[in-house]
Image (tube, rainbow, N blue to C red; front, side, top):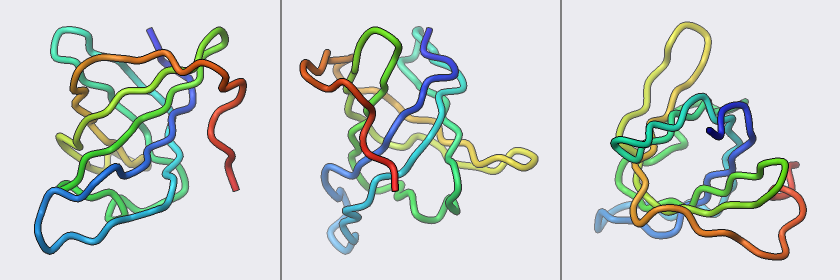
Length: 108
């Protein structure tokens, strides 16, 4: 459903007591959306997987051709498959439409 679209991950809050909050935006591409379990399989672009915390809650912004969407959740798994970094993002509470966003989050 969202395959091929860009997605940006931003840390919302740290779950563990000794965790470090990351203010950065991590750029991904949606590989697959699994409706049955509410998971999004993402390809992390241009970064090492170690920048993605397993002990944090994230916001995931997806920009499609017609709409901008937001969902929140946690990283269920992260691993390397061949030459690509894969993140399995577990969605909590579904998707929200984000009015007024015409472009995806600015990429540097």
